[in-house]
Length: 335
Image (cartoon, rainbow, N blue to C red):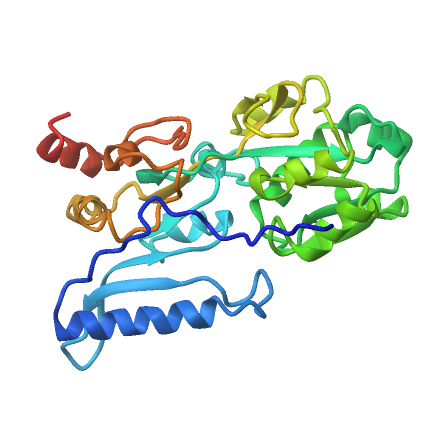
């Protein structure tokens, strides 16, 4: 029987406390709920109007006077943050902010960015392949020009596609090359999408390349899929680009029988341009502490509020903190 996970995030704080009182806050909360519903429409394709931008400022005059803007979006939006068009943004995973800061991989120049804090999210990027192909590592795909039916994310801006492109490039090929050999993309919006899970169950998907392993990894291994190894040397090359190596162990996933060397896909940094006013940065830091119980943290990954300011495996960080964060930590955490 096919089991498809419901995909709901298990929250560390399911009991949300009441929000502050105040008519203007009620109106702001109402607008947020409207925006969330519109952007969260499941019929909106990935890459469509599904991101949210929030601005804080003054609407007391004849025109709106923005003071600080926040946004969700793709990794490449770091250009917009660096240019000052958006003040603060999230990116997933941390490694892509590293690339923006270094000017490597996805970015052809270094962007002057800094971290405010990192949302804890422990994850990995892994690959599996159906045993009928007798493939050991990624290079075998290129050398044998195997026409794989590949399960990958449908959003063309998704961070996993950036990673896959960088990984395949090490062996001198691309997703487009696989398609030219007769391969096919089996797109999925979510890591546990119906097309993917049915494709695993009936074996019609040849290979899967993705993060969010909790959604699909055990299911694939249970149905006979085998670990696809990274080509020797490719992990080190990916580290040079800005990724981190990771080894997942038996016990972390039920069906994993041996250690598997792969890539870290952890952390959602909240970042800004380097010259963002320190007061704004301190205000954002104060806000995450004040609103800790309202933020939907992921159970298991989130432990304490101080965790978001200090590097750990759930919140890796290779980009410096904004100086305003250091001031905040000294004043409020005495560190």
